[in-house]
Length: 216
Length: 404
Image (cartoon, rainbow over all chains, first blue to last red; front, top):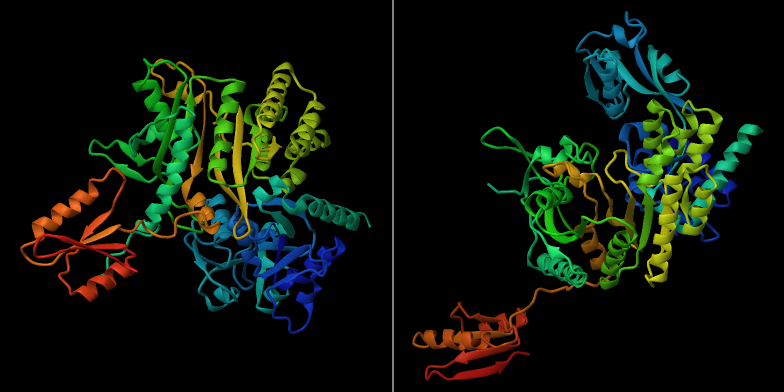
């Protein structure tokens, strides 16, 4: 049976709305108090797995899910071996470098040599500073990254920014953008090549939904 | 202290070995029936030998330093070694050479890998010194015969790297590598956002989607503007698919002209074989292709020779066959337990055991080494599922007891 990995959190609602537009109803995940991690749609044609954003590509790469919806930021960070099929346009945000507003730095290149940069996105951050040829120490954190510059543990952070409210409220400013991110439809490469469970029809249907939404 | 194996290392215990042997035995039978001969090459190779073909990067090889400072590596695959051996050590032989292997390979685990496994087992074939339709067909049919003998349902994903590369040549140079990378990794979004003219973008997306039922794909590719070499490739591919379909192979074929690597290693057909199971979904169990430039790299005079081959991933096959309940679930048990009853009968007991072993069929005989009492010995035989005990009594006679 076709299985879709859906991310918990910010992308959940839009993901479920999109899937319901192509005839796959997983709205049970949105019901308050839902504790199920795996559900089958009422027509029994597909299954959905509710997983963390960063775990979506893992299920898809292993082939336990043939399709997945995940932020581009995760794809950049983990570089999983999956097919990148459709830019779903929702979940817009950007991967940015931010510093304390009171600091003298106004671009990444002004950061001190061998300074510290805190991030949940260690791989993206390392790639970016390597590309700038600026040697910095990347400090891996798992949350509340903003505290890095506030406490003085790091000069800067690399983190996802959607509205910028969290940065502002914590006295930080964005100084550079690494890349823009949106939600993406991904597929298990072998299943995509073999068109397992008529997967391609769903992909095309989703693609045309997005096209229509842009045209409208 | 407890001595642990290095991260990523695996020990195969007797039951694992019995299962692995079951699998290897069946594959070997198929290889023999097709007239292939086993070759064993060195586990260690010079790093430059391993990397000559362009498919292997230094970072994936587990390297060792030789005494005279020559960088050596543990082989990550067999084709380079076999190509080297065939063109340098077997040069006086006539072609074609039909060779097979069954060996361990090593890969350095990379950042982002989910497992840290570093040693793998592969079985495969190389058909060297001959190109053309029949050689391609032989290797594919041999691969399908392997699946058949393992009772494994599978799919064949078939591409043509030479044709795809040629179709990609309409893209101007710095872009071509990017388009190829996007197609080989099935990254449609990259193609949609790349700086390309509308015509080129349409062409790139067409190439990405050249996949599906062979007759449909052949029709779609024929509608592209093709030069005469490309037309020949399409015709050959059509003949190959017809030949496979007429030969009663029951493995469904997906023709996939987007199946291409990011490096120039394969020159003709490329293929992957995929099997699906309820528990693990679609799994890649083998892959291969034609490499007509490779042997020339190893030939002392640079003489170019065609070659084609495939490798099967034995760990993947093992897992799938295990989940399908096809592999033995127990080690072979002993047929006899021979017990010397007194200190005077030891020699007679050993002689008796040897007589049993010398039978023409395989008879497994173990000696009782414990000196325990009868009940304990019977309990031991029962727990090891040994069906017969021969008690060698003080007068030298053997009393036979069936264990139930």
